[in-house]
Length: 350
Figure 1 (cartoon, helix red, strand yellow):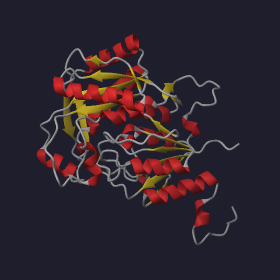
Figure 2 (figure 1 turned 90 degrees about the horizontal axis):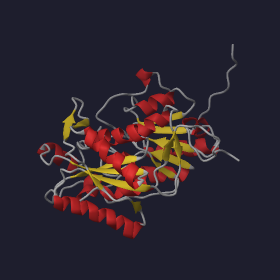
Figure 3 (figure 1 turned 90 degrees about the vertical axis):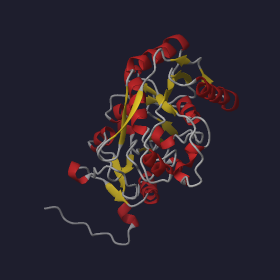
Figure 4 (figure 1 turned 45 degrees about the vertical axis):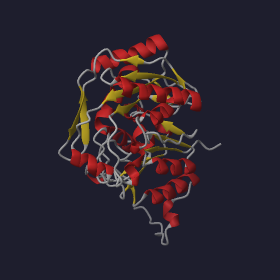
């Protein structure tokens, strides 16, 4: 029996990716890729679409820090049927906005059958601040990381949470021009970098799945919102997709035993990444292995880290449509050179 053909799809967070830089706009790529792969491993930035989501049994929702550890061969992935998800709410969230998030959590229990623990409110405001680098990529800080970790520990030890959904109060006074650019489909998601910091802290400390949804005051209706940004206009919270993703997120394991359903880095056949975003930890780890790396030129970003200066061997394609063809050929065991009109003759080795 052939081993499962397993692909990792990465679109780094907060770098203004043309596809994957908005609310769930890389979901169609992931859905299509899951059709030509036996297993697709990707991360919340690809799968989160605010109140929109599309879970599949062969798509694995893996937080970015956990994905880096997985790629380095230090952690493996244990697929699950369902996680018990703990909800951690920033004490800075106003009562009405907190109620909206609790109603979302109850709705996912009643309509989707998710299993959630009782929730925890942090013992101090998390104090999130947003930043933008000189390249235009977003990042951020959390002023009270200790409160975040204490809240997560309470959910794990007292409520038995197997995954953590965090909702932090984010600043409403974002730059008006940046926000307008993002809503029109030309800017960077300025929340994403800080969101990554929050989930990284939880995963690094407790080695369980985690993801974040920002709490924000509703903004005025804009008739010119671009389709790629429209998922974030639908309601009061971005929490539904996070709860759905975490409910089936694989658990992290550090002991490589003989279990047949564990997934490790050396099981990965291919990695797909934007062509100018090749400097991340996970991609660098995979580049030192036999894994095929496919770079997509059409998915432009605000950063410029192509594979060539890094000495990274890749298959460069123009679009995700072309990447799907490469994956289909690899899965079938067909050389992609055989699909081109001309094939060079074999040469004798000297």
